[in-house]
Image (cartoon, rainbow, N blue to C red):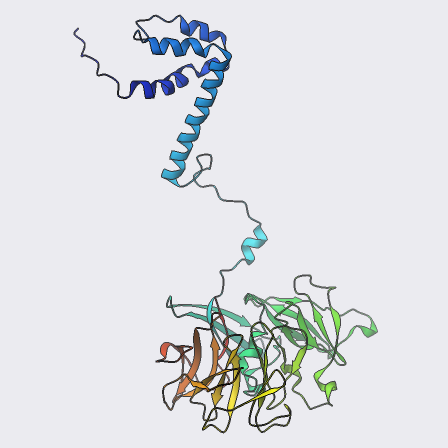
Length: 434
């Protein structure tokens, strides 16, 4: 039978080392095979002197090293090709997943990011009514919303919206009812014997008791007004004589007394709303809420602004006291401007006396910048994003409250969503997370 002529191999000398290494790599393990291979029929090896020379060299120590290095390079090259083409390590199983702790899988939640709006409503739990907190994260750039719900039920939060006036803004205190990742809500559990325990609930409504009472005579204690310290993550609470705190991660046994008197003991019973102490970003000491008294703190905790309205608590009137010293007057033409939050480490917001205009003011002084176009809409709260380039605020027209976003330099507000109706204190802005 006539055989078809063989086509000359492409790049014969370039491919030959690879072919030889693959065919004769066994020499690495059985050197005696090299002698046999060198005695192959010349016709079988196509009478290629270059090939015979390489085969002969494979039987020498240097030849075996050459073959081993070449084989390693070939394996490495093949591996790289597989990784680039498939995007995974060839040793991985197709459906393999990294091992994970089962408990971590059950508790892990996606990051809660966006403009966090909080509101409450009463729900029935058994024979009694309790508060349900609904937190909604709006992502204006992505157009998405995420909701987390905490049903306090028989457990008590530090306050309800109706218990807190607009100074300081509801959202600042409400933010500290929740852990940094918004997975826990601080509450206290009141018992029939008058005692109460501090703990937290999760979205499932499961209560974790962090300060269980002992069975002895001295075990009963009244602990209320639980909030998270934003700097340490500990839950602080009010007690009959001293404030206390407990670590929610360490649990039972981590409770300790703090060197601060309770709100009622500070200047006499009834002088404070006990359930409304809160913290500056530094978390170094609790701030007791007074009617008309409110201080705003920069994100880095280095600057403080005191509101100086008609109240005598701040020791000043007619403007804002910067770091306890410099006085900046209210915006021109406004008899008052209610202090809101910092939008950067050197600029803060205030809400005009008619509740229709937000002003941006620098702690160094200068002219206040009006952010909003003229409107009859009533603004209740505002919070900046972490970069300070945008400001979210709630405005009310008629009985409908709407969430807007505006550049911190001013301009036309962009509507994000209608978020509620009715009571002025619900909903409120808790934070802007990114």
